[in-house]
Image (cartoon, rainbow, N blue to C red):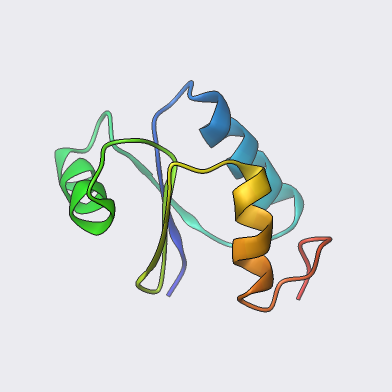
Length: 85
């Protein structure tokens, strides 16, 4: 199952995170919480808040984060500093 990244278009942290994931070949799904009410509900249920980005990695949640928080989160899941497995 791919990690889901809940985003708000135009959010600078969301843009930064998506860019990092794409540059490093980390597959993911995007859910735009401004256009999809169900995605917003799911994000709030998972994280208890409405801030983006929020990531659901097979039940492990990283909420309201930037790349600085994403890198250690990925390392704990077997991804290297360069974004590679």
